[in-house]
Amino acid sequence: MTLTALTRNFALCLAGLALSSLAFAQKPDSPDSQTMQALLSEVRQLRAAIERAMAIQPRIQITLERMQVGQRRIEQLSRPLEDVRRQIADRARSAGDQAAIESQLASEQDPNRRKQLEDMLKAIKAEAERRSVEDVQLRARESELLSALQAEQNKMNELSDRLDKMDQSLEQK
Image (tube, rainbow, N blue to C red; front, side, top):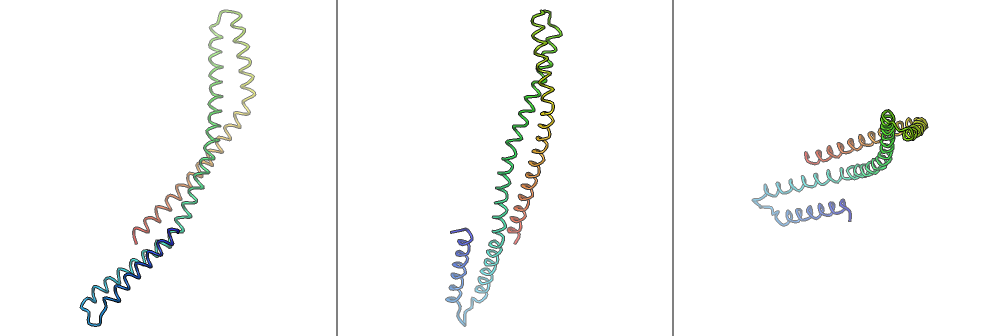
């Protein structure tokens, strides 16, 4: 049974109980008519509160479903963004390697070791040139993923605010 059906059944049972109590308690010459009116008024207020809750429940359910979809989308965007950032960090380390080799080369006296360092430096520079286009593409991809992720997070914040407003409207009435 769904929450709505349970709520509806509960409200019907409560209303039936209250009305049957009223029927047994009501006598033409009853001195408790004010008590009965107060009880009847409270049952009506309870019914109105249940109707309000039942009316807003589908909107809450839809909003929660949208939040779940948004959360999955955020997770789907976060993984490739982390991968791109990891690749960018790896490339930054390669640039650090180049600086370290240049530093070693400047202080190296041994001609054989100096030749090895020069060959390594040439290879690193050639790789850096080849990767420069890829670096631009990685930065563009990072920016694209970050924008999409921020848009999804903004949607999640809006949905959360909407849920908060629905919750407040239930509490106020």
